[in-house]
Amino acid sequence: MINNIKSVFSIKDLENLSGIKAHTIRIWEKRYAILEPIRTDTNIRTYDLANLQKLLNVVLLNSYGYKISRIAEHSSEKIELLVREIISEKSVKNHAINAFKMAMINFDQALFFNTYNNLLSEKSFREVFYEVVIPLMNEIGLLWQAGTITPAQEHFISFLIKQKLLLNTEKLQILEPTRTDKVFVLYLPENEIHELGLMYLNYEILLNGYKTIYLGESVPIDSLKDMKNYFDNIIYISYLTVQPTKDAIDDYLKEISTKIIDANTQIWLLGRMTEFIDTKNLSKSISVFNSISDLVKEL
Image 1 (spheres, rainbow, N blue to C red):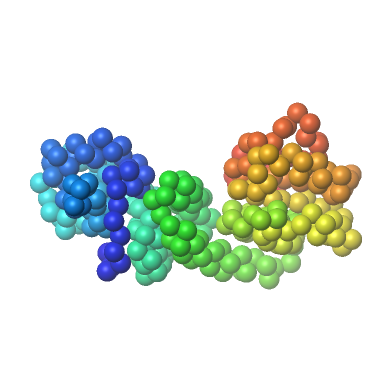
Image 2: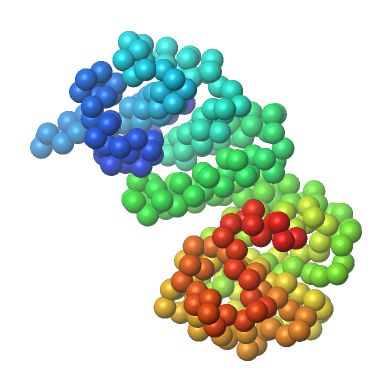
């Protein structure tokens, strides 16, 4: 699983990637020699990809009931064999997420596709996305904020996921809508480029038999207004990850309310920035959802 790409991780990076506190990792390292750190000239511990892979495997075994003292008795190769033996419905989610993380860190397309295909042999695309991809993307967002991964690694894994989304969405787009009472227009506001969540919502809405118009990233409000010349009963959906900023979001919604909303129009919003919306003065035609699953329930 590990290729020749050089990567070095701090103890904080290991904590972020594994979910195990740095204090616990240090205990495992000192007491059981689970990891073999590399020391810099200034005696600071760093860890390579082999250490990271081993730690992720150890964490999975430990969560499955193996004691650390017993795990420590095995070689890295034996630990990998044990992980393969115990993969089950209970642990497959965490194993797949860890494999996708390693694929991202290593820029390893083969590992990504093998992991994805293994999941798809047991689950539907929808199950794979809900159970694995959404938690993975939430973790990746945190890893990026913490500086554990680079923007290049985030873009690499996002592009591969987008490929799968587009393939599955196309299968639905060739079908005629079975529900024609409303049309969904999906877009991201100006300067917002994080569209994976929006792309998945497009798939879900199509799956529910509706017509969608997918406008994508960085769409001006005036372009949204133009859609009203072509369709009645529009529901606009937007996923606000970083834009508008918390200081600008209420003014943005006021402008949308003025230019877009009428008796036949609704706006559905979700994403991290929605927590900064002043809901006391929010138009009744604007709905805020806490998650993709909450929004899908309203379809």
